[in-house]
Length: 147
Image (cartoon, rainbow, N blue to C red):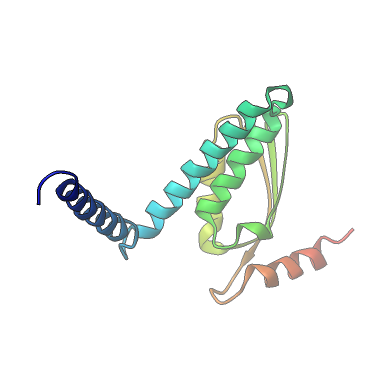
């Protein structure tokens, strides 16, 4: 059993071993979620670079790249990032909507650290109880700030 058949069997065993190691790495109960988010973030960044390189005439504006970085920070910081409204203009970032009280301080710190943020304007409704959902907070926020 020498030659190509043995080589295929060794390759199959190595592939199975690598697949098992990758599964253990990403399904780890303690850090697996962080690792999956990091890989998703890297894949998103690579996809954006590839798309931008195919269309050089449609380069992103500085405000759009800042918004992309802000949305990435929201996705990695908050449980429900889609409940917030975000705009950016000339480095000024405006964020409004509902967040859990425990996430509000972390969110502000993360956004202030981002490159390109010259000023940060937060209009957040802090959800008081852990069982409050962001959709409930969104309803409260819309009632309070309806124009």
